[in-house]
Amino acid sequence: MTPLRLAFGAATDAGPVRETNEDAHVAAPPLFAVADGMGGHDAGDVASRIAVEELARLAGDDRAHRAGGGGLDAEAGTALLDGAFATVRRRIAELEAGRRAAGDGEFTAGTTASVALGLAGRGGPRWLVANVGDSRTYRLHRGGLDQVTVDHSLVQELVDAGSISPEEAAAHPARHVITRALGAGSEGAADYFLLPMVGGERLLLCSDGVSGPLGAAGIEELLRAGGGPRAAADALVQAALAAGGRDNATALVVDVVGLAHDMSHDSVAERGSPEEKLGALP
Ligand code: MG
Image 1: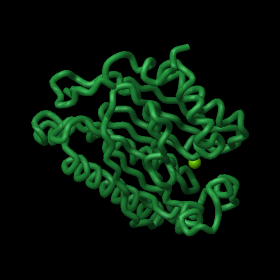
Image 2 (image 1 turned 45 degrees about the horizontal axis):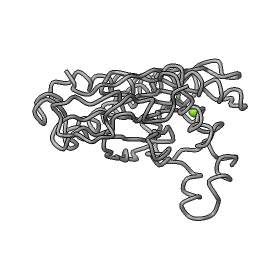
Image 3 (image 1 turned 135 degrees about the vertical axis):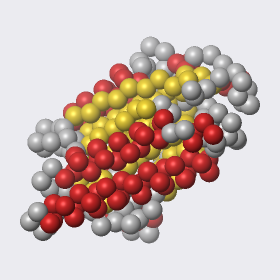
Image 4 (image 1 turned 180 degrees about the horizontal axis):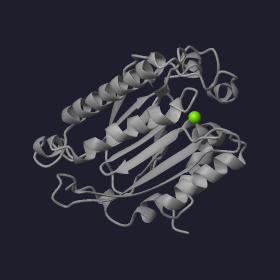
């Protein structure tokens, strides 16, 4: 049983042109994840489902309770996520080998993943965020919207090198090319981010079908617009499609409703409702 009090809601849509929705997501508190699959012949949706299936197992993992006296600490959380990512890679490799042996010589499958795992062990309540590829995690708090993850993508490398601006990246013809994945021949490791967990904050995990069409300003506006996490997730997906998005679009919104009083964390910022703290009451 986690001492973290979290509320969450998700929305997903295949979008106007794709036959299948290759995005997948899971909300298994304290574990939340979005995955965006790729590959022809139904490979993408299989790969992204493998990813969320393996990540969801962590929510019930006994090691979560042995580590840190009732909750995961950062080291144990990272080890669990690393293990899950390795299992995802192995299962996708087996899938590829099987399909190739059956005559589909070109078969490849892969997926991105963005994960937020709530930690309640040593070190107090925190988020351990991880990503592979260009699915993102954002954090909305009193100070504004932060993009927590950094994309593993060609255009991010061009931005980092100073060759293009973030605005140019959003419209770049190669904006969908990712440089790390789970599967698809990639061995690129996940990046990890450790954040304090603050009562009243709101996380967004999303596929590029949401972040691409909306951008940070559009995302922040909708996350602040009031309403619960499910309403916010719906609004984000519908706005991404209304803005011309053609990709599968998935949004998973998580609110930190409160932190249990027995946690070693007692800031004034935790008192009061999440709406109050975000200034989002309609
Ligand atoms: Mg996508």
